[in-house]
Image 1 (tube, rainbow, N blue to C red):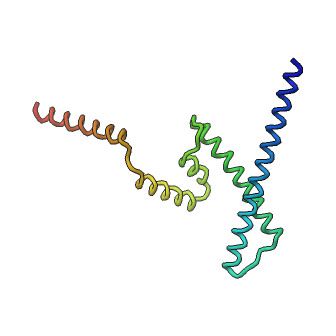
Image 2 (image 1 turned 45 degrees about the horizontal axis):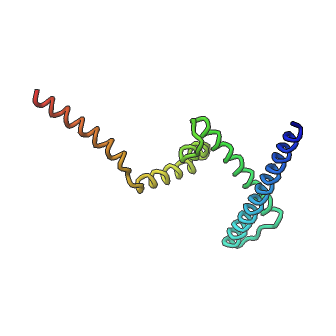
Length: 141
């Protein structure tokens, strides 16, 4: 029994180490991308960004992304879902009116481009058929 417990403890430690390594890899990649973006934007504006400032910006951005991910997960869980959807993202942006408006506009644009599925068409046509049938019945009466 103790052997099984020790084995499961070792597995948990190994999973935690792998998770920590994965998180560190993501953080490093994110940091490199954020620094590259900061340097690129500074160059466009004829400015320079010192390395400590670029590192600070990238760390703040990563922490914000972690916080946002946790919020999105909580919003989806509260709605009884396991997957995050666009409404969760828009809800997370509610403090920034311009961002929220931009996200809503973007989502509406995506929905407009999205082809309507057959199932939705059938439901709409059934409702239309019922409305037409009831209108005909009323006219015949």
